[in-house]
Structures are given as structure tokens and as C-alpha cells.
Image 1 (spheres, each protein chain N blue to C red):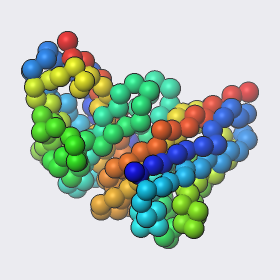
Image 2 (cartoon, helix red, strand yellow):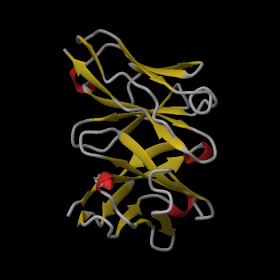
Image 3 (tube, rainbow over the protein chains, first blue to last red):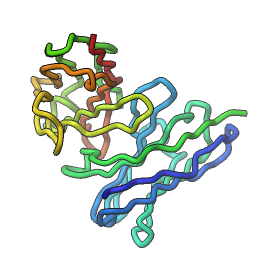
Length: 120
Length: 110
């Protein structure tokens, strides 16, 4: 089966950094684009970042541009997001999702999420 | 990157039909047939239901259908069942490798 497992969440002070990981199994990771999507407590889904299958192309939501960096290691079947200069408004459950179809716009498989809390 | 507009809530009795709208702009919903719908039960990860406006993903009952007119996409759930009670989110490709979600609609089965 296809599995995506996020890890790395926790409580962090404003201004600090955190790196999330998403370990995948059950499919050929290197042939799929990948996304990070977040959900603040009681709120809706917010797209965060996308990375192409070979890592050649990346893009970010305006809310995280310049602070977050998405990356992947296809040899380790793992997706990452490095989150710097964290703010209270970054508090959310962070999901990784597999992207398919045109520019990977369809997020067809999701992980269970990892919770990030930014608080002093 | 403004969120797509969805009604906060929708409801219907078992067996009835309900339609959830998702309004964007010509830069996203209206500009591409790349609209998806996701179902999310409390405490769970989102689940893909519909993609490319009208296509159901494997295992999704044909009670779920999608459509689009202009800048507004819609999800219709026919023959409502108790297990359909969940939050529903639309999403659209928005050009230049940007993606946008709707604010979500809480569907209640009365």
C-alpha cells in the first residue's frame, strides 16, 4: 500500500526553526511531485509548497515564501520542509501529499499529518 | 493567492441531494479544468474525491459528482448518507505552479 508518514512536528518558539519529514513507501517516489499542505486549528486547508519529481522546480505560498524550503531525497524516499523564522500563525497540522496529473495539481494520497505549535 | 469561496455549511436529510459551490476567478477555477474536491472527516487526513472537475477517484460512490460553470465549480452529493457528513474542500490549479483551496464546507446530514 501507499503510505506517507510525516514526522518532526512539535512545540517551537517564535523565530526558531523546525524541519519536517515525510517518509513514503509503496510507490516510486522519484516519479511524483509532492506537496506540503497545512491546516491551522479549526481552519481550512492551505497549500504551502510543491516540488517537482526530480526537485527541479519548487514553489511556495506567499505566506511562507522566503522562510520555508521544500526539498526531497529520492534515494531515501523522503520529502522535507525546512521552516525558519516561525510565527504563531504557522501553528497547524502539516500534511504531505502526493501530486499527480497536470503540474501535480491533484493531491491523491495524504499522510496523517504532524502538528507544529509555535508558542513562547 | 486568495482562497476560493465556499459556503461555510450545507445540510440535507438522508436520501436528499445537496450541492456545494466553490467560486474562484478566471485565474484559477475559470481558467483551468483542474478542480479537485476533498472530503475530510474530523481528526482525519483529507481524501481525494473528485479531480479534473468531474472525475471520481477510485472507490468514490457515483452519488458524488462534480461540475463547473464559469468561475464556479460545484460538488453534488445525491442520496445523502450519514457517512457523508464531513468537511469538503475544493481546490484549483491557479497557474504558475500555484494551488489554492476553498475555505471548506461543513456538510451535515440531518
